[in-house]
Image 1 (cartoon, rainbow, N blue to C red):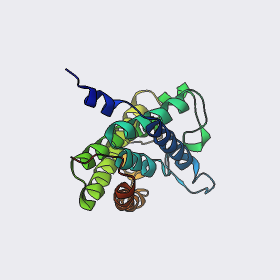
Image 2 (cartoon, rainbow, N blue to C red):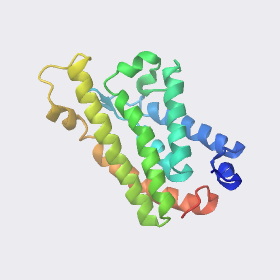
Image 3 (cartoon, rainbow, N blue to C red):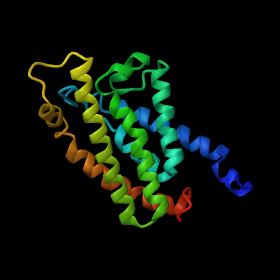
Length: 198
């Protein structure tokens, strides 16, 4: 039976809704902040800062609220707002080969939040961010590969190896940003105290 304390813990407060909205907006900004740079595209994968902000959402807001922020972002984009990479949006984006990366933000934020909810050390924050980055790459790249093979028009000589080769240029950037996200979130969490550490 759910106690009053447990019910209160799971109920979203006004400040929680504000934080969720803030991080949804940051992911929107991160989706297109690099669009002004013409070379920020490798193969079929645009290089953005979405992953950084999605992981940061999980680290700072926790598993449930972090995943919710990413879900709100995804739903706003599917509803038609041009908040995905290259200012795209609409329900048709679900057929995009790179849509798997957007789905992976939800899982990555949830896992990152889950890890830091159980351990509040600086190391755990960095490890959580790196694991979340790995989840983003695994889910996103595999989705992209199967999308190209099953319903999208695959480029000539497209293979599973090529799909992963497309992901190599942004990998160093994402690893560095994951480490930075872990350190930054740890310091910010000590001030905000949003996540109750077990």
